[in-house]
Amino acid sequence: WRSFGINYLWILDMDPKTELGIQGSASLAATMTSFCLLSLLLYTAAVKTGFSFLQLPLYVWPLTLFLVTFLACIAPPGAFYYKSRKWFFQTLTIIFQRVIAFIGPEVRFRENYVADVLTSMVAWIVDFENTVLYYVSGSGFHPGESSLHPKHVLTAHILTGIPYYYRVQECIRRYYDTQDKWQLVNCGKYLTSLSAICLASLGNYVKVDGHWSVGKAVWFTMLIVSTLYCYCWDIACDWGYITRKGIRKQIGFINARWFYVFACITNFIGRIAWAFTITPYSIIPGLGAQTTKTIAGTIEILRRCQWTLLRVEYEYMANPNKYRSIKQVPILLTFENETEQIHPMRATIVAGGNLVIVAIVVIVATIHFSHLPHET
Image 1 (cartoon, rainbow, N blue to C red):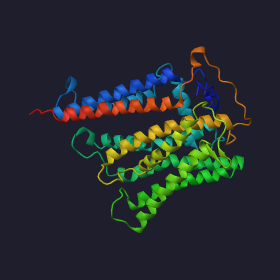
Image 2 (image 1 turned 45 degrees about the vertical axis):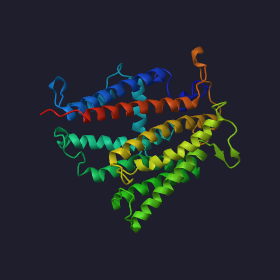
Image 3 (image 1 turned 60 degrees about the vertical axis):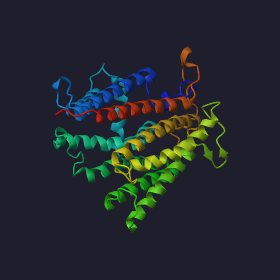
Image 4 (image 1 turned 180 degrees about the vertical axis):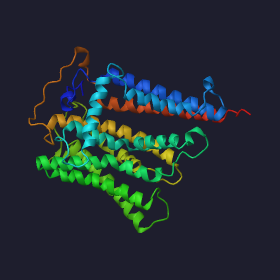
């Protein structure tokens, strides 16, 4: 955005002084990834070989990662990017106070954007809840016991639907404030997703196999409809790439028109993976729930990163949803060393490369420790 002059700070209502920035984002990602890998390696080593660093019990390592993340979120002013965290949590507060559409102020693009990102985090939300239940129930202190708490079966579906419920409320509020009927069409997109989630919960449909019933067929049909609905909305409304008049002519990422075509193709693949994330368990025969969740969650992260690039770019170029009263946007001030253009594809490749590196390290460590003899 910055290298192409897209004023994302103004679009997202961010103070330049509180922006995390490229260096801050990279530093935060590297720090948390290091903690995650260290925790995973120490836990895997303890389970497979009996090795115990500092003689600490193995359940300490996942719990430590959980506590470090929690402390980072509540760190006092002046520590761990406080101003950026304040912007984020203020936005979350505005989103979640809108339990009913008419509660709270008008919906800004900032809340719309963050709430949309939350719909890609349902796998993380369910994992967070499962982690809490894992330790509260005591299972986390006894390796080998099932990590799936009985109450998780119901709450996983409920938690999956929460981000979509709040997006429905935002769409209703936008329609009330602007009388824009397209907001109702957008609302329908989230309602189809909620319908798929509710049907999966009521019928306990967790996999696609040879056993079909009327309810299961309705659920799977709704899942397909929801996926196609969301995909069409992405490319036609969120990105504005395909319109009634054809392909959008004015683009923000100059000399990168092919990237828009690439994004349309890969977004379809990503939307299929997204369909797996709104079903809390494995729906593919032969793949376990955790394997499916990991693969689908990784693809969805990449899809959302790509979606974000084009969503903010289109909002900057066309003001499609009239979140601002004027189409013109102030010029983004940049330093001399920031004028070199970075291709938007590069951001996707870097994000994907980092995830692949993490996945390789985890797989190699798991295979290595699984072949080491257990201590007797």
